Length: 248
Image 1 (cartoon, rainbow, N blue to C red):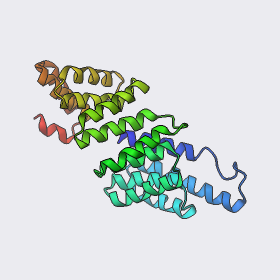
Image 2 (image 1 turned 90 degrees about the horizontal axis):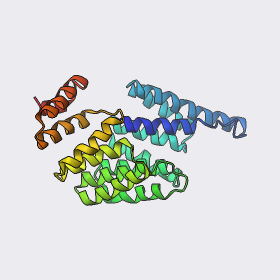
Image 3 (image 1 turned 90 degrees about the vertical axis):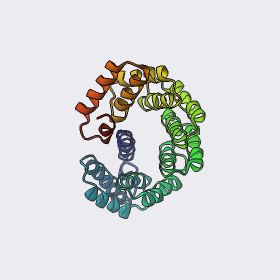
């Protein structure tokens, strides 16, 4: 979810960079643009606080101001995903792509959504389109998401190709490092899994998934002391994680 929030904030900051008045629009159009931007910004704040109902109201209001505001469609897609309304999420992600077909971030988000609903073969072309955009500044994100998609699909060799391509572009990108650690563990290459996981944690990242993976990797390698340390950290840092049920 942290990755979603980073994408969300980046989209909002981009959207807020220019208001209608700065673009020299007529007064009525200026009010429309600014109304949409302000409501998306407010919705983002409410989402960070977990107040999804209020956030939804703000996003719906933004789309009343400007039904063709791609950022609002993307952010409301994120919100609908979080509350389990996948069909509505897909509708808005798709609309954002229709409005901004050359925006790498929008294409990447839609590809990720398609993977989440297991429409794998439909997803990969959107990741490729995102990567091919000359002004898309985070192609490692799209490659990493494509790799995660292939893992979920069970195509491990394909996943490794995507993830290693992402690593070439951004060697310390945390999502890629964690996905590679998980991939290596699935392939029973435990030493490689340990190496990628150590790089991930050295970046200051930690999640229930990474700590549970560390617990499992070290157990497979026979280092029960290290495995127990990961177990302790998981319980201490994420006491509400359902993964704890697997290590008690």
